[in-house]
Structure formats: structure tokens, C-alpha cells
Length: 123
Image (cartoon, rainbow, N blue to C red; front, top):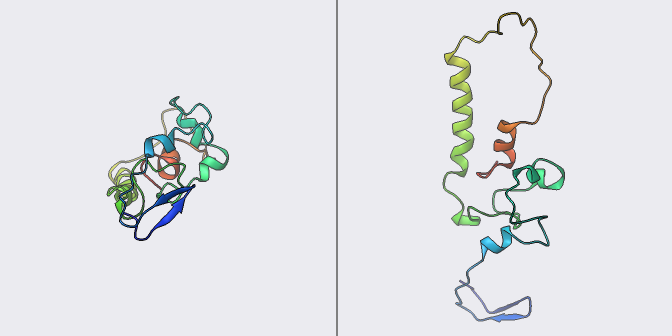
């Protein structure tokens, strides 16, 4: 609801006007996204999109709301990820498969990192 009268993109908005933001259109804007109607999660794995703020401050991507109305599970995701990984490390005896003597520990960007930093449910 507009707390005071204002003008946005040439439109006069009177005080106490209820505004609805078309989040569907924002997420499918061809001026921002290449092939916006195509399912392509890889678009978030490189360049500027990899650093996109998914907490609702970057209006290129706000599928779960923004501000006070942001997804209630956003913060819980981080806690659950740490709990899940801690449980895996604690509960199992990890060893290399037969015949394997060394594990490649080089860092790579994979599904877990994508979910943590770029995924649909916030960083």
C-alpha cells in the first residue's frame, strides 16, 4: 500500500493505493534474461548471475517474495544444510572404494554450492 502519493515511471499513484507487483513478469523479462521462458538453471552458475542476491533485494529474481514477506523457509535452509552435512560426517565411517588410494580434493562448483549460493531458496 502506498504510504504517500508518488509517481512511478510516469504513473501517478495516490496515497493508500494497493499495488500488486507482477513477479511472474519480472522473472520472465527478455530485457534481463536470455530465453526467459526456457528452463535453464545453468544461467545462475556463471558471470554476474552467480553473485545475484536471492534475499529479495535484487529485483531480477524474487520468486519467493521480498522484504517482510520473504519465504519463511529461507533461513532454515542454511541451518538444515549444515545439520544434514554434519549428520553425514558424524554418522558414517567414510573410506575410499577398493583400489583407490587418493581422493581428489580440488574445489569444484557443483550441485551443493549451486543450492547454497544460487538456488531457488536463498543463500
